Length: 262
Image (cartoon, rainbow, N blue to C red; front, side):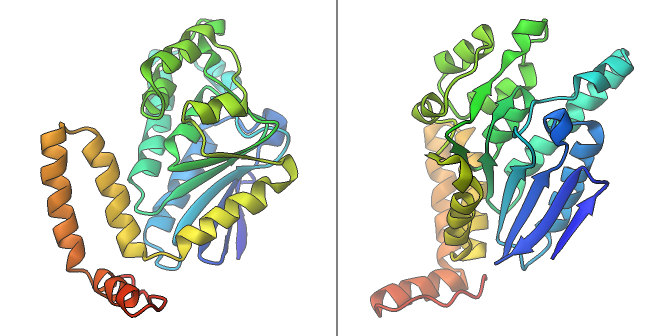
């Protein structure tokens, strides 16, 4: 199943995996307001679709995403409009984090500013050998304040500040070293390798993955004492789930589990 939304975003589902593809190649897949709205709309649909277990995000053209659409930002120079655009982008990133299904970015070419923010907001990121990452707002007098929220929650403080203050591109190898991405693959294999990871995750219990993803992001914001108290409660609740009982039985009986996603 495949479809195109306003020609800005393509969508298909295969093997319980949703494949979202940014489709503004001539604009380096810049995140216009319409594209961000399309992404939010599709993620809302995916949230309640029980046939979808994992979400992947790719891009057409030579680059993954060059950030905000600067031409759009220049059209209406009111503070109200700027706030609307940046809050819309923030809503998109939060939507990705709070989606109960894992989201994997398959990145090629450049991922800059809000594009780098998009990569950082995804749960996993697979990047091609020709990928480059940057938060270069400082170079044009616009500090990457909203992108730094996601980036700083992926990598260390000094690495984040280096990216923000220097505004230079970093290589995929450095991006992997500092924790922005998970793996580097050959350019021609980016889609295949990303979907391979997605298929492995899709083979797990959807209910268990949803519990784990929510708990992961919540505990990050807690003190260590609060985090252990919270996750102990989550694991106790998880133990009562049907899939946990099935998984434990399957392990003891040396067989593959049959998930009910409950």
